Amino acid sequence: MKSIILVGGKGTRLRPLTFEMPKQMLPLVGLPMLECVFASLAKHDVDEVVLSLGYLPDQFIDAYPLNSISGVKLTYAVEPEPLDTAGAIRFAAETAGIDDTFLVVNGDVLTDLDLSALVSFHHRRHAVGTIALHEVDDPSRYGVVATDSEGRVEAFVEKPAREAAPSNFINAGTYVFDPAVLDVIAPDRRVSVEREVFPLLAQQGSLFAMADNAYWIDTGTPESFLQANVDVLHGFDVGRHLEHLEGTTWRHPSSTVAPGVRTRNAVIDRDCVVGANVVLENVVLMPGAIVRDGAQVRNSLIGPRAVIGSHSVLGPTCVVGAEYVVPEHSRLAGSVKLGDI
Ligand code: GDD
Ligand code: MG
Image (cartoon, rainbow, N blue to C red; front, side):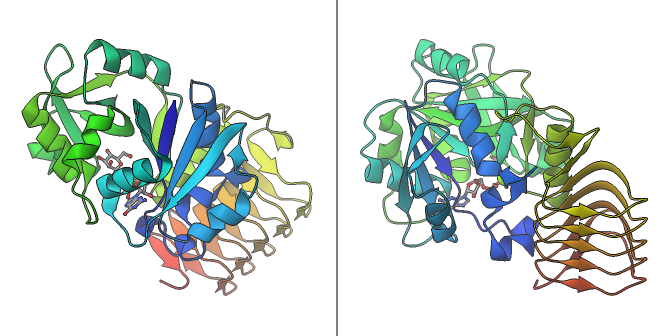
């Protein structure tokens, strides 16, 4: 089966990190999170992936020149301009010549969803489209779905106010589609699958949805990207053995860590330097980051080659952009974003 992975968004909530790198190429415990998405697709009957690209496409194309990840064939569809989610699906499907039932996944979601069960459900219901659902406490930052007892979608509302949400079941960003869906997507303009296509299919009665108890996280915010890293450190399976994991700290062997450093839930990627008596808790250090002596960093993302000055204290939730230098003795907390914003 063919699968389209949507990776063309600008990743605005993860700026400034996403100025330099598309969010699906940001490292999740040392490897681009896109590879984790591939690993989960490869466990099911997916033999070809079409990467739907728009923002910084060359970074994907340069990283995977062999046109294969995890043994799955890879092709690209590069949009001339952003077409939004449904426009991107139509463009990618046409570029790859898709003419059979196919999958679509949001490339920033980490999950162990049973795709094969979703595809079987789709066929049993003779659906034009089927959405995977996930239950959350606060659905307001997602697409919210109400179904009847058979799973037929009665309402799809994108990002409603919390009190207006018709259920606690959200669009988990994985879809099975019949090629007939392409006929309801206008060509050559921005079309949102969430705001236009799903409400239309729901009205026609041809859209279904299925919930399960899979692990699920959308990694598109600093807090959730950090949480996804922590979940991998705690054993969420991303299809590879995590060498160099000690307790809940993963350190690339090319990095140096001075004596007296205390870490918990920390990722220390390649070529990092961590000074004496540093504290790292719930932290991702991206390649080449430097944390100088005595600094304390908690619940924060430190971008490539950024420098945290000595004795600084960074708290929830700092996002430090590539090469940014935080002066010594800084005190930073709240939703702090440092760098080219
Ligand atoms: N090719 C392409 N072109 N891809 C795009 C475009 C575009 O114009 N716009 C967004 N994308 C990609 C993003 O890169 C991402 O992988 C995916 O589409 C979803 O976009 P996000 O920006 O991450 O959307 P969201 O997280 O706010 O909401 C979406 O995901 C939620 C679940 O994670 C919606 O689908 C919600 O309904 C859903 O609940
Ligand atoms: Mg998202």
